[in-house]
Image (cartoon, rainbow over all chains, first blue to last red; front, top):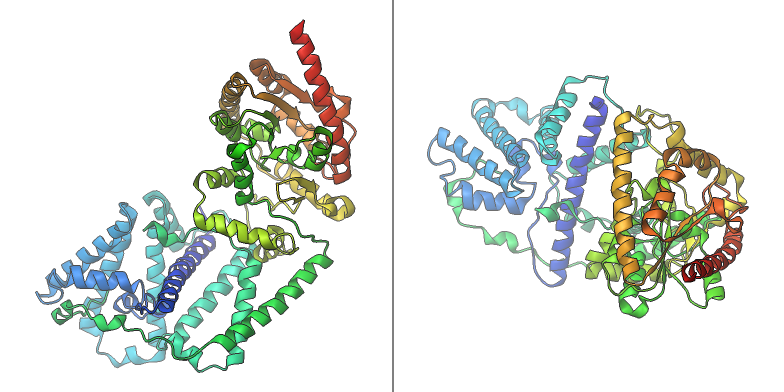
Length: 249
Length: 365
């Protein structure tokens, strides 16, 4: 059994890794396409600043969520055939979305949890969504943090090799039993906390913005210096040639 | 997935594919970026050179694959060296070439058993030369493969990896910082911070060698000249034995089972190689310090080395048996200093010739 801090940091680190991996290579593909004169749509829009799960799926793996919406959810009837069918359609779509990642029950649970989240959000919105309090900044930040927390629960199932491992992680993360092994050295704790904090702040800042617009407003010198520092950091980390995580899907 | 989708959205919105081409040229920014990166990298390079770093080819999987391919490209009749770091660092290819007139192909992999490479060579009819096999018992009989990826790289190298290796080799001999020991995260990982982990996490082994373009290896000069660096290397070697968890009965049983399996594999590969006319020579390099204490206990000679030679009927050179392999300086208990390795290689080559001759004579009688 792990110490809960290690379990949480491992999960948070994976949330950053899978976003950086997948959004990074999506952006690379968009850039390469542009050089050839093709315009591809965004695949990610700062998803960890999402407020709720409808919002999350407008920001995460947009090519998949659009496809699921257009070719599964809507043909199943979408929200046109009553509440019960809408909930069933959401669950069916997300379960199949989970299976799209691979023939494993852990992916099915990942999709099922997202289906449940979407259904629960829809139910809660219908009852409490009109209240003025949800427009206040404190409430919005709370809902964004809650969304990120719940997304991290799903990442455990996405990443775990089997149910037993996923369950051990979930129990450790939610029960805070502090007698488990501390497997992360201090440096990994610092790296994870700093990196994930910066990532979340950037996502929140960019929530309503477009990257191209933000860059377009900066001076040439600032852009050049930031790029130069990023290039330097890429070179001195001497990263390996591991394949992208999402190449397997 | 947006749950508020209405049926009107069933029609796919093609306008989302209309990303406008950027109107702004970013050429100036790119030039500034390159200038900034070059300035910062120059500072980083100077910092590492001031800390005794020297440029060298990288001991990469791609470089191993290049050497491995030589066997299939007309050099299969040469002497090939397999094993782990001791035979890798101790055998100097320049010296061998000067005394033998032929440069061996170096396929040793540090921290890795040579048995899978032996098996692959046994299955490769292009290999007909001489095979020098370094036996570091803790690796050889345990199937430990720290550099397993090298074998995979040879079998599955993609065109992008092939090209990446070539591009990398263009800059490797000129950049001292271009070594895993100086990469940003390796450096941050070894900073002295308060310890919080409650399990044994072995330290990363520091840089120990420099490499030529054909994987000729030599002990990194800092190990010889910097006492603190050599002491740290010894500390890291000793960590596992001193701080690691004591071996359980189950672990020991698995180790012995693995030993038996590896012995069978090595014997089978040797028999195939010898039937094809390949001369196989097993070599046990010298060690000191904690290795000299631990290795005979873990793998007693009479149960392992002697059995291997008896079952394969191959020539074996154990450092305990030959004065030519003794008395060399091992700054960190396991590998010879560069100048000692030069001296050793010459003596080692001559020893091999003498042992061969005496064996042939014995066979003749």
